[in-house]
Structures are given as C-alpha cells and as structure tokens.
Length: 249
Image (tube, rainbow, N blue to C red; front, side, top):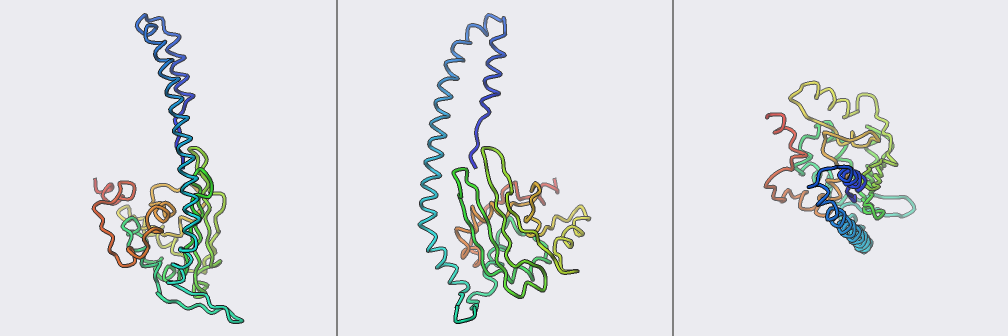
C-alpha cells in the first residue's frame, strides 16, 4: 500500500502564511515557496521509485509461482485418476504454521478442529501497483461438518491511503459449530482477548485484532516451514499485536 502526503494541507498552510502581515513571515515566504516546489519534485521522484519497485516485485512474484506450486505439492498432492484423490503428505501443516506465529497466539481453541482441515493456502500478492492482495484458504471435505463453503477468499484492494475489501466469502456455519460465537462469548470477560481467525473474513473494518492477511503476506507465506517447525526466533512482538501487555498497563 502506497502512502502519500496530503499536499492539499501543505498548500493550504502556505496560503495561510501568505495572508499573514507579520514582517518575519513575509521575509521567509519566498523561500518557503521555493522549498515547497523542491519538495514536490522529490515526492514525484519517490512516487516514480515506488512504482518501479512494485513493478520489479510483481515480476519476481510471477517467477516464484511455479515454486509455490511445488511447495504446496510437498504438503498435499492432488492425484487425478478418473476421480480426485488427495494425498495428505504433512497433515495439519498450515494449521501448525499459523498457530506457531506469535501474533496469532490468542486464536480461540474452537478454531483448532477446523484449521486442522486446512489443506491449501494461496496468496495472490501485489495484484496491482498499490499492493492489493487476495488470500484463499481451501479446506478438506471433513470441514463440511463445520461449515460451507470449503474455499474461503478475501480480496483486499488498496488505493492511495484507502483500503477496501472487494471480495469476501460469507461462511455458513453448522449449528453449534461456529468458533466465532465461542470467541465472542469468551471476550465478554474483559481479561480475555481470544479471537477467531474466521472473524477476519469480513468486509467490515478490521481493527483491534491482528491482521491475518498482512501476517500471511509479510511473514508466514515466506517461511511457513520455519513456523511449522517453530524455529522462528522472536525477540519481540509488534505493539500492534501485543494487546495483552497493553491491557495489563
């Protein structure tokens, strides 16, 4: 997501300075205008640089795609011989990788039986020059006991400083099987900060919870085996995720 300065506010402030009758303000005003013009040129170069960087990133993202497919085949393999047969090589791989991430340590235990059935994680990253992305989670047939559909997708689109969810799968839970209900009930205790990963599948504004999409695309997606093996060294947890410590204060 590209972040830009509000040039309108800057121009408004300079214009307000221009209205001042103070001699000291008038004395520096020509240099302020000159400074502002140079700054605008620097911002143009920064924007050009950001566009080039995302183009290069997207180029290398495309080069990685065959390797991502090979990586997924190490976890679960689809064999098509008239009918589709799924060979689960590393059962619970993605569930364990997710649960070992420190920012996801407060997921409700009610998520666990469903996450154990997570077979495939797909990330379409940097879909456009603003860094938009799409996450797709595919669950095994056993997950029908809990929910439908078995394929969950969330597409987040960035434009300047705005974030929109343009696509998000609506999950239909079987009666008594909804882990979101369990997490919400647990949070009735102010000391409890449990949440469900499935809460992230919403078009509503996502605040005060770890952003699973950003965690996936920035960290989990690039080193899932390290998280699966729980060999990632964590010196600290980002303040954005360290909600328990914040509550203690």
